[in-house]
Each structure stands twice: as structure tokens, then as C-alpha cells.
Image 1 (cartoon, rainbow, N blue to C red):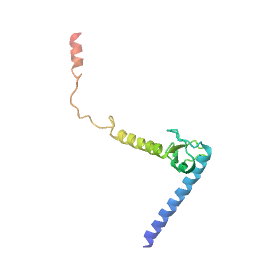
Image 2: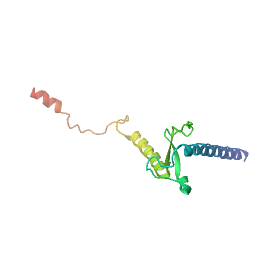
Image 3: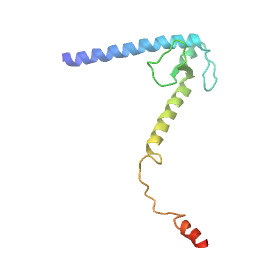
Image 4: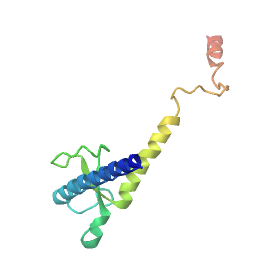
Length: 121
């Protein structure tokens, strides 16, 4: 059981460290920027201020420059939308045309065009 307890303590410590780091950059971002969502423009104050989140533009939560250049404040909805759009784009990029997949189409609508043009000359 000590192995399980050690792992549990490591996970708890990691979560605690992450929450502390997040509180730090959130507090700094809230001081630097107006309390307005950078996408939809909604203003936040009072109890609703907790609905405003810090989005890392480069998606690296460890990159927290003191000037806030990697942050933007987004409401919960716009923040979720931002990450969803990236996931969808990544999914399409993997399956999109020209990604090393062979074409299964055998129809060539202009396949004989070159020969027809040569005959006209």
C-alpha cells in the first residue's frame, strides 16, 4: 500500500502546485487587463468575475511572461470555444487531403484532354 500512497501524494502535490501557479498568473492577468472578454466583449464584475478565465495564446501554461503578452481574458464560453476549435482543426488536419493518403478515385475527367488537344494541332 505504501506505493499507492506515494503515488497519491505525488498526484496531490502536483495538483496543488498547478492550482497555486494558476492563481498567480490569474491574479496578475486580472490586474493587467480590463475585465472584458477578449472575444465577445462582455464585461465582468462582482460575483461574475469568476466566469472570466486566462487563456494562454500559445497554449503553454508554463509560459507566463510578466507583461502578460501570452495571455488574454476570455469568458468561460469563449475559452471553451477556442479550445474546441483547435481540437477540430487538429482532427481535420490529420485526416485532410494530401496527408500521405493514396487517392481511391479512378475517375479522371480530363485524362484524355491532352490527346484531344494534340489531335487538333
